[in-house]
Image (cartoon, rainbow, N blue to C red; front, side, top):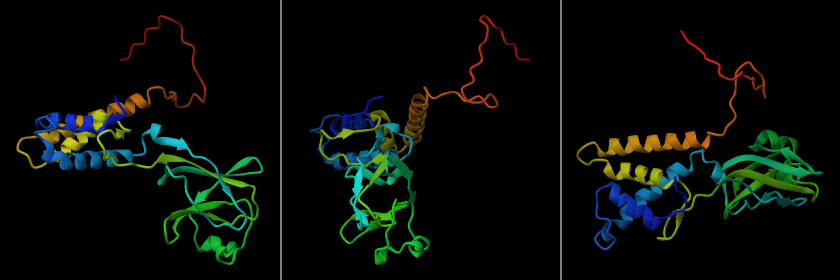
Length: 233
């Protein structure tokens, strides 16, 4: 597995998988098509919620009394938030996503009704950009909002842009797209290889997970004598 591979290398490897010339000079005309296929595969795979290395804990956002909207962390994908909390009096309080009429009937943000701590959040288009709305509007300056989730996807544009996913997986998925409609079973072959690669990556990623034994309770590790032979009939 290799992450952090440059777009130029991905393009060369995709050409090789498709049986095309790997010479940049000879294949300059198809570069836009190759880049589009790579980015389409990259973005599709990136948004699958299975890549722990794309998760991060974002910096805390200080909430101000009377302020309803806040800019999200620059690198955070607001569609990939896993957890949100508000730190208040030294403790993290979990926030629920979603603010609607039921909440505004209790504390109406449009007339500046306030209390602390906040208990909900959501994403709102405020006329220029997407911002984070917190509810209720803070009544003090002692709260800090924090998220855990996925970082934003960034398209690969320049030759030295780095791919944050496994290079083989991205190239195989891109090859599926470009092989569609060609004679033979190239697309099916690439699809099978891509699926196997995906399953292998997931298995390797969970290799160190603790084993759960049903009915034994947490932390139960039976001590077995050495040289035990188990026969199953």
